[in-house]
Amino acid sequence: MVSVTVVYVFISLFLQHTSLSASRSEKGTGWSSRSLGARCRNSIALCSDEQPHIGNYRLLKTIGKGNFAKVKLARHILTGREVAIKIIDKTQLNPTSLQKVFREVRIMKTLNHPNIVQLFEVIETEKTLYLIMEYASGGEVFDYLVAHGRMKEKEARAKFRQIVSAVHYCHQKNIVHRDLKAENLLLDADSNIKIADFGFSNEFMAGNKLDTFCGSPPYAAPELFQGKKYDGPEVDIWSLGVILYTLVSGSLPFDGQNLKELRERVLRGKYRVPFYMSTDCEGILRRFLVLNPTKRCSLEQIMKDKWINIGYDGDELKPHMEPVEDFNDTSRIDVMIGMGFTREEIRDALANRKYNELTATYLLLGRESEQ
Image (tube, rainbow, N blue to C red; front, side, top):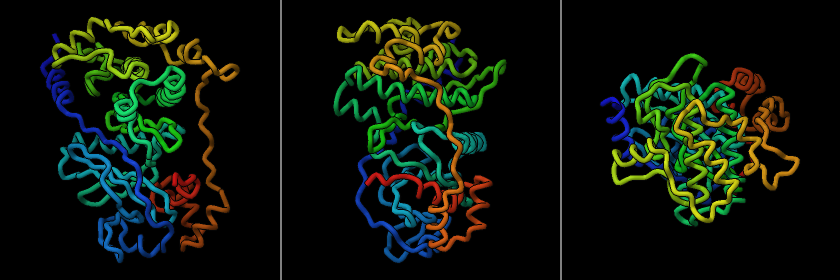
């Protein structure tokens, strides 16, 4: 029997649908003086233009809401770049939840992949934590599917290759996401995937089982419904199967009027294969949605699968090689010195990965504007 705790967790998750969608950006002003941001640093304040600020960021609008957090679209005053700021009310969190938030921050600091939302800066006050992150202006894949319907397999393949690459990269770093779903897959201005929301993520170690039952029920692996402990990667791999089905069909493989019905369908592992789905796509899908977690495919095997490499002759999907971050870009450093920062404080912030205003400014200067 599934434990009462697991049922409670899943019912809570089933009832919650806190979709943090990213809507299209508003045009705004670009460069501004450093003093304007500096005066408002580490707090929300009304500055000279009467728009609220957090640090060096001018808040534009709310683009998402959760239980104890909201996400705002903002503009970095010094570079004109748009960012997403996750604002977490620490006073509403118990010690365990607060610990999870800081774990999310710790994990995000270790990630550097083109298909994962990048963290730029962390600002903490007594009551609030602000996570300044990459803004994906294309919104959620979930909303894309609602608006446009299912993807053709060619488009789904391009997106899914990026998702697999990013998740495999996390697993190589011993990080499991545990909440992979269409709502947590964002699109940037060029329609590239950006995996977001590492709130349920955790580190895993061989031989150490995880026992937290989290995520979204329609994407949850059968072993989670059964209350079994798990290694980590295999629950992400099941979720990837659900995501692939959703991209190609525009619907969920396992659904139900209530949690009991959904659980029964997941534990049966039976789903309808749409008539338009290719044999190769059905083949790769059946490697993900395997009831026995020990027999589920590995992502290394998936990278060699026929379907995922169709049209990519000579460009078989390979593990991502993390580039060495260039912290000696003299042109960026010179621009920052022109803003009023000193060479010494820039070097110190970058060398020690401080995720402060200096690191954020340097990283944002290195990004192309989406405008």
